[in-house]
Image (cartoon, rainbow over all chains, first blue to last red; front, top):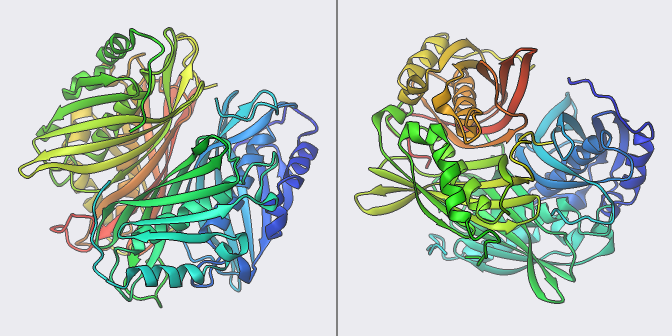
Length: 152
Length: 152
Length: 152
Length: 152
């Protein structure tokens, strides 16, 4: 796993504050359980109202969780005063999303001044232990000022 | 736009029934507003509890909507009795997700016996009209029996 | 198809000059056959030395062609004096790459100051006419000075 | 790194034979230097005729190398008598492709009966050592008979 140093010592507080403003994460009951330089882990308990047609966690919820984990992993390494924006993400759903709880772990692969590339893995807590259910490769962008959130 | 013929005359009912079982779509208030061979359109009204940290629709919600639209576009062309599974999707967030309402339109690009490739576009209804906010390229899979939802 | 205006009147010459410097495109025999604002089309004749294990055009060659077409489509809309960089691309191989000739068409979906999103389609010329063999969704970046090609 | 067992004891020979039939890999001078269950490593020396407009290795060549490494990593775990097909791949170009030699390492993340998901990393050998230049997330498909290479 790559080893990163955060340039902003207040990075964890900054991530948690921003996460706290994501109404959708609150709406589905997601929590931010770990923040480290280049890394962020979110957790979500299974809920019957977040499912697709067969009772599995909806792939879009899995994607939302992984997107937020990836974005905040990138955000830990950005300077204070900037914003993080998802340019794009690609998600493979690799196993059925069953389980009592889901963890999304974003890990920065490469941090640049403008573009940061992140891998995120989503695992389900099942009777036998952790099972990987999704893999995301995402591109995040650092925007100098929080007032200018347009990707150009 | 490609022209497709559905092999199952009951395709629209089959799509709407499956959509009705997606608890997450109900949870966020999404509706299925149009189903045609190779095409599906979903709609979602803006809600303050579905947002990211700056009050825009959360990218994961945009992705979930596009994923469902893409999956059901593919499902219209599949034979009766099978299931549709998202193998993977890739989403570019191309403009800030502001607006009063969002429409996700999935359009099949290529339908195969096992693999179907779909493009989905998400537009926001803004004061000036429709504005494209996201573009998805997705890979869907046809599973012969609904009881066997594992991708292998 | 979106309608774009090039801000640099010399865009076509600029694209063709840059394409002429891509030694790999010359190496495989690709030609740049059409350049318009937001659009670029490349062509490649089938060659037995560009194949995968079953005699089809190698997916990597298909990807390279689509990547260049997408990058130059984006480049047509960028100001003079900047460089274009591929941030990432995603390619679905949707039909076997057989045929006498291949055309890759890049079409800008959304042009931003920094990030441009492009769709590229690769078609094969077969006995029955054109057949789409691949679909790419790519993210391109504008770099202010050609001397600074690092993505950060 | 996941630990896999090959079901076909002859997997390495099968991979190397197939790789030997990829005329494009021979054309650019790529070699297959390591094959293990769930893993494949390819190597390519820098050549001035495989470049983009600024003298870096063309992103399409990087993609081709990663695609083949990913495909053969998946192929090691498939049963004898089947074929491997690239459904799609997504490539982030994370650093300029400079260096004397390039290594593409495909590592299976999840192997299914039909669908296998692979991560591939491309590194450049530079004066300071290995530098990661690209990251790929790919979806591979197992086709029962080599005579039926169409993805449906």
